[in-house]
Image (cartoon, rainbow, N blue to C red; front, side):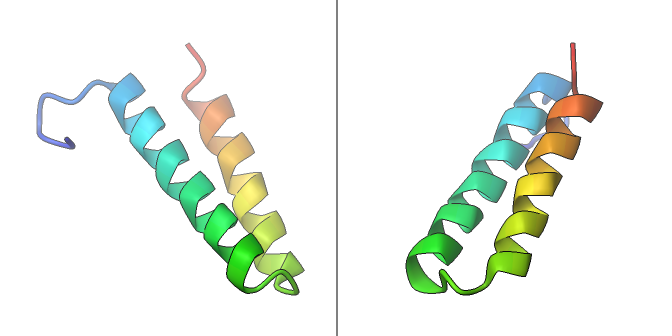
Amino acid sequence: SLSGDSSPEDLKEATLFTLQALKAHLQETKPYATYEIETIAQAVVIVELNFAA
C-alpha cells in the first residue's frame, strides 16, 4: 500500500510494477506504439537510478 509510512523502497517497487505492467499491456495490445513503449522503458531506468540504494 502507499500509505504515509511507505518506505522509498516500497514506492520504488510499486512504481516499477505499475510501469512494467503498463509496458507489457501496451506490447500486447499496441505493439506498434514503439514510442510509448520506449518512453516507459526509459522511465523504468530513471526510477531505478533515482531510487538506487
